[in-house]
Length: 339
Image 1: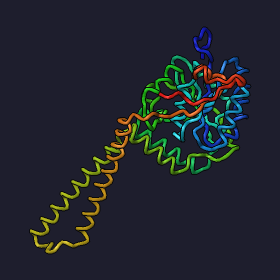
Image 2: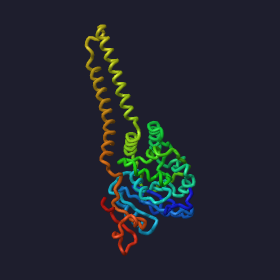
Image 3: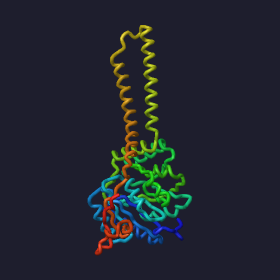
Image 4: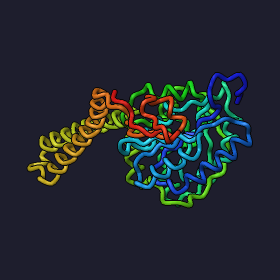
């Protein structure tokens, strides 16, 4: 990474979507500041409250009040990790933007390694983990989804993680997609194939539990498939074609059997089995089409990816009207002006 003669006000913006790891934020800030200061890098820390718990915003507000490099953004509701990350990216001022989780599983001490590997030839660098500290079922489900997504979406970098260093010009393009349910790694894979990877250790989660339950992982996988792959539509088409061929062959079997006298009165069971199978596949195909139509409707509504309800921090001063600042507090907290 080259920071000399940079036109950016800070070298690195650390973007952290906050959901269930608010208890670790104070330690996270301290370790980020220590690591990047030792590396001689100007930095800012952007904490985005994705409304996971009521305790998060008071902690973020206290950190932003005490430390000038911290900016806090509070979303109007839970928009999801990827939307919260895009929110932080849009507000970031650094030449390089590093995204990381709030639970210290992504070690702040590994950030310089990501930035060292970053360059004009590699505007996107992932921190990958040789061994994860998650539970066995979580590692298995994540790996299964990773392999499945790779087959459905060949351009997807199969070593993706949420621990990334992105060059600001590339990162800012994520906002232009305008997807109501964004998936950052799919969007980045579409934008660039110049990707670097760095092996980094995986930290232990010491506060709270992971927000990604099995149900949420399945929901995320469904969103990715429908948004970035035509595979579900192809599966529906192939299933319909296979059913049509099977039905035609069965019809021929009935006709030949009837003409030869082998079938006098076709059974009710076999008839109902064919009808129910056909109806089931048709409903499955309609469900797949409904998912795509729902995405199209969401795009037509042009709903914002996220809405910021409050923001706080000395670095947020330039983003609000001067009249909203208070005379007795250098830290500004105010809702966004109406659009």
